[in-house]
Image (cartoon, rainbow, N blue to C red; front, side, top):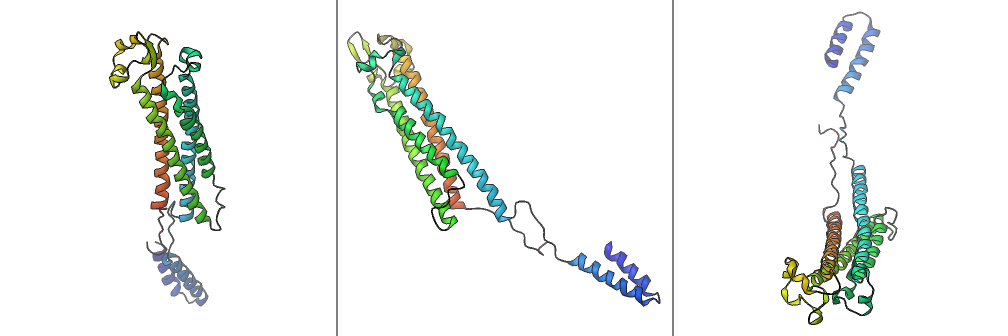
Length: 258
């Protein structure tokens, strides 16, 4: 529309004897042509590699920080649950006389799924901070080192929480150490965990009271907590590996292509 209007204007004024008007019309015609046929740059939202990658990095850091933060309450709950295993029905006499199942002395919830996971979570939160990339002269080199460290500590988290998961499962299947008619023993050690679904067998344990329910509930909670820790650390490993293997993706449209 602009081109046709300018053409008509040029023809009309060209018939006029006023040469000054013709000069201005030709300048107008050149301006319209330069505006109509100049190559345009089309901006696509997110196509800027720097801005797109920055948004991706921010999202990745927020996701990683959220996952690392979840490890802290899980670790605190693991410590609490493991401590409760030492005091059936709130009594301390059984722990002092060593009348507890042997798997509580592996400190799976206190040490590995607890304190060690707190350390792992703290390190991962520090690594997720965007102001830590100063270990090398190159910022890109520093980020790769931070990503590698994040993978290593996430793998350690899998090992620590996996240890707690395995020991808690063994303690659950073995059953409690309790007093029966034959004395203190593992009443369900030879049942391969069948007592877990048959509550009629629980009456074999005479002391401590309700020790079977106590062990089943607390060991099951430890299994759930450590299982969540394994999943979170595994997700973190996948995220960090995707950063290394896949890199960043950007869409760039060169001027003049469209």
